[in-house]
Picture 1 (cartoon, one colour):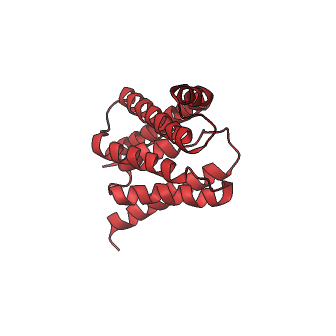
Picture 2 (picture 1 turned 90 degrees about the vertical axis):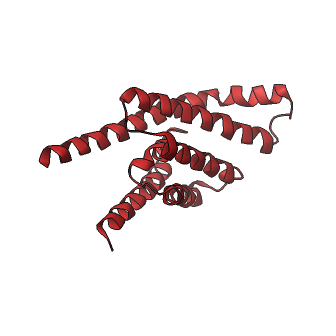
Length: 171
């Protein structure tokens, strides 16, 4: 096996394990590194299909423990979309860019996942009032998720860039 393939396999397993472990240990609702890994996983796993497979594997394995639900396809799809956008648009720029990309991805996830809740849950009437109510009830979860997404994204960005700086200094 080539060195690059071994390295990417290690990163694949790291993404799967991180998602799995973080989701099964006790944590505040919606405070996970999944979105940050979806967005920033492209720095480790360059192949879109492999990155999405790692995300889905980590989510699916942890959903077997925390509980399967009807929104799984929508949630996985949201993370796949964010991964594709990260692969397409993300450059290793500034910490400000990290914040902008993460805020945008987190807001996109909030909008899409809660629209899926509105459409499938039966909790909210399928009216404009029901849609507004669905998003309003989800706002407290969005705040926690956004905070976690920003913190995890910043951590990934900083660790990655510090690692590159150390490798450059050793060369």
